[in-house]
Each structure stands twice: as structure tokens, then as C-alpha cells.
Image (cartoon, rainbow, N blue to C red; front, side, top):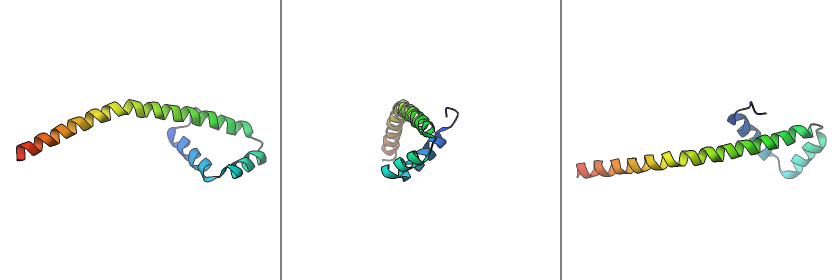
Amino acid sequence: MGALGRGSAMRLAAVLLRDDDKAMEHRLRADERTQLYADASTWLTRESEYLRKTARVLDKPVQRLNVVLERHRFQASSIEA
């Protein structure tokens, strides 16, 4: 599952969120591919960790950009006044 992309993770998450717990249990009992579900769980956990890490990395440039934008807006409004 490592070759699948972020979009695949989101689509799988959407499918899993459609079912309530009982429906998911029924699906697991009816399907002999339990290992596939276990692998999917492991993969989604890794994707989740990666996305949290990515979000933390993006926080700093976003904060810096917002500071610069606010400074620019303030200076622009000072010039106009």
C-alpha cells in the first residue's frame, strides 16, 4: 500500500467513515481478507502521521507570510491615509 498516494488515503478514509462500527464489523466477518484491512489500518496510520508532520512544517511559513502580509497592509494603509 506504500505506493498509493494521499488521495487514495482520503478516499479509503471516506469509505471507512461511511460505515458505522457494526457495519464495519459485519464487513470484516464477511470478508476473508482481514489482513488487507490490517494493512490498510497500518497504512492510514502512517499517512496520518505524515500529514500531521507536514502540517507542522507548513505552520512556520504560513505564520511568517501572515506577519509580512499584515505589515504590508498596515504600511499600505498608512501611505493612503
